[in-house]
Length: 360
Image (tube, rainbow, N blue to C red):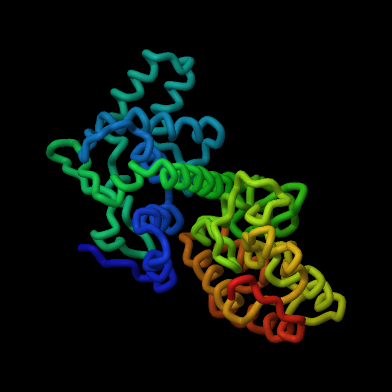
């Protein structure tokens, strides 16, 4: 029985009518799935990449692409499951790798996984937010009797749009990197912080374990649907850093503000990591550091509420890096405590000069 999305913040995310329904569907599945394994990412990439003009796909047509996508990540990071335990698929992949990754070895891999590669991933693909997204958002339905998938208009639209397809392929790869890095780090309570030198990094609180996530842009931008956090313009990842639509990583609460609170010994700031994921957004260069940019000023209140909602999305994840990263960076243990602490910080930030984004 389909239960629908139980978590209000995720339901609001998929219901945002300002963006393509096809993008909203796959983004929601990618960002908020339970993801106890990374099979969902491999299947999503296969669904986008396999060449076909038909509205149905045979399991066999998808299997080769699925295995190739999974192997690319498995060889780099074997930790593709939250439990870390081997499965029949990973054992078959190990045999393929040991055999020298030859064509004949790949044929053996396909044969040995043919009856099991799609187990669970098809049924669980549309599970998000503690339930299942409504049928209207589904990308496919599967016909076990005929061993085929029936593609919905949502997926067909994505496959036909080279622009949207490229966006989603990049976002899926970025999300996959985050999930596998969090599992590989072996850190249950972690920080997710950003620096100019290292980009986004998962680490233990004492810094003894560190895993680079490389680009903060790839990690954060899907939550903003590719747009500047402030002016809502579509940022351009191919632009030069001097151009207005270049995507910057911005600290919503200025460094100087948080550092000032710590210097004063303010108890509410002592446990806060100002570079934590909770305080990071993607802004266009014009909003962040342009002639009339934000710099260390504070935005209007509606953007603070937007940040709180975004952090709630992080916390709604299923025990992934961003959930722990937000709570740990703020020194809190629950979403309610997170909201209270952020409102305390905002109350002090309100005395700063107000900056208003263009067009607001």
